[in-house]
Image (cartoon, rainbow, N blue to C red; front, side):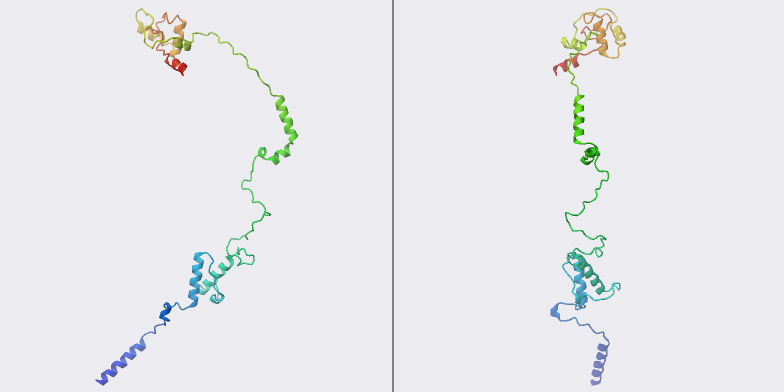
Amino acid sequence: MITRTLLAMTAGGLLAACQPAIPDSGNINTGRGVGFGDSSFEAEQRARDAALAGDGSYMPAASEVTAQPLDDGSPEATAAETARVLAATRPGGASNGLGNDAATNSGVAPVNASPSNPPPAAVNAVGISNENNFDAVSGQRSIQDDAARVAANRAQYEVVQPEALPERRNVGPNIVAYALQTNQSVGQQIYSRIGFNKARKFERACAQYGHADQAQIAFLEAGGPEKDRLGMDPDGDGFACDWDPTPFRRAAQG
């Protein structure tokens, strides 16, 4: 029985010796886990957070930045490069107090605002026309030249007095005056019409005119409305070839 106990204890010790050692996680009260006791990791974390925030609120201490080559890809090199860019872009970080244009990759040094700075180049190279450019106009002529030109224009000004309008010649019946002098409606018989084949005479006579106004003028010239020798007013209303005086009457009434 004692022999079995000793063998079991020996086997347990050998198994414990074969297991890998568990790294020390530090004091449980600090709240740190495995790997968080490394100061370089904490420095890199703070530098990365500050770079992402973009406010330049954090600047790594000299002890946190190691002088290692910048092309090895290590966390220390990343932290050092971040510290260099932040130091160059922070106001007062560079020698001129305005930032390092090489570090910010602008290629052009910033210029302080000053009244002595030259004005920016005009975007429109053509500019305004000479007629609207006082400098160009003053170079071409003086104020005295302009006054002489105005005086010459005034001397050529001529006032034309109004004259009486010429009298209208009587070139035929005035259908507008006729429309306003009558008051019968279209189709209302006022004058008597006798004869045969009124419809055929009406179509033959009215076909000679392209517009009803022309037919009405010809009708009045031939003795209308009392007489209708051409058969242009078979219903006796005084209007030839379906001429309508209504538009003229409405225009006179406004």
